[in-house]
Length: 260
Ligand SMILES: Nc1ncnc2c1ncn2[C@@H]1O[C@H](COP(=O)(O)OP(=O)(O)O)[C@@H](O)[C@H]1O
Ligand SMILES: [Mg+2]
Image (cartoon, rainbow, N blue to C red; front, side, top):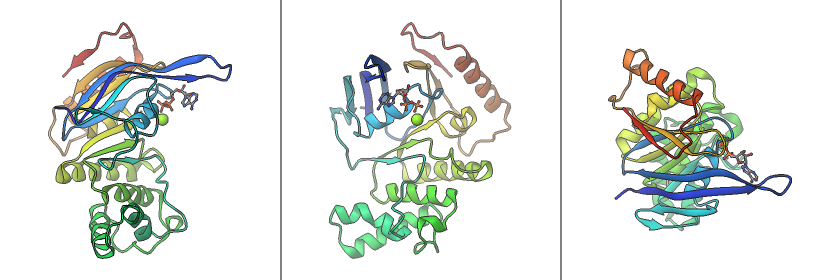
């Protein structure tokens, strides 16, 4: 059974003239336990919309989102979200930011401290527990945002372009670390990006969306073991295939192509 499933899912928004416009059309996608799925598509194609529906922050207009085979709306403790900006509370230090969700859930103080420490170590922020968000670099804030999600131990983590605001070298490091965390913690990850090379570095499977309205244009398996070598010829070949696909969004007849 897939852990996550989008079934015949549509999302419609009203534009400024009040006309209904599809942002997502007929999304059908099953994500299995332990997969690392990257959702790739041009700006405005509905990636964040899809993620917000999965996070339970937005209802679909039509169709269903299923978690462990059960249709659901609303947030779930089993699904954590990491946004582009880490959205940490500026008035709380890193430890207190991480503790927030556990406090709300009524977790005992001692256990809270232990879980927070584990999450801080997982993302390499030891020694920065007492710093405030403004005292950290952008990359460290994203680490803290990830730790705040990990502390709640969700089985699935949704990430919306989490590394797009950090500098290039930091971004490469964060990509390596998220792979390491995914492998060690056995999470299911759905990761949104418009960076083809990032998707090929991270994903076990890549979903390419068409320009608005977003439909699934093509699915790519990425069968290479981790850690990956960005200079491998097979790595570069798959990047080229995906660029060809993005440059020719002709698959809008509802036919989903699957490529390995
Ligand atoms: N609340 C909203 N009201 C109206 N239109 C929206 C709203 N949110 C997003 N849209 C539109 O839906 C489309 C998809 O948006 P989004 O999911 O943010 O795309 P992406 O994340 O791929 O850039 C865009 O054209 C955007 O302008
Ligand atoms: Mg977006």
